[in-house]
Image (cartoon, rainbow, N blue to C red):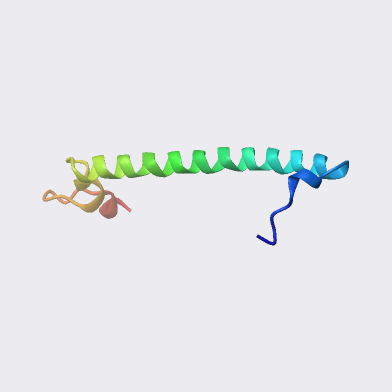
Amino acid sequence: MATETDRRTMTGAGVESAAIHEGLRTYMLRVYNYMASGLLLSGIVAFAVANSGLINLFFGSKRGKSLATLA
């Protein structure tokens, strides 16, 4: 791959740069894992609301009370 570096030939500033890249990779992995966890939680909540009586609160009910009519 053209963008990949050969880590065996790094000396001096190259080693420091590799450490920065490794730190950035670790940080971004934490960010992506946090985002994936949030997406999973959103899916679980949406599934629970869709399969319970709470869906009527958001999309209307037979009695006419919903968040859409309150706005």
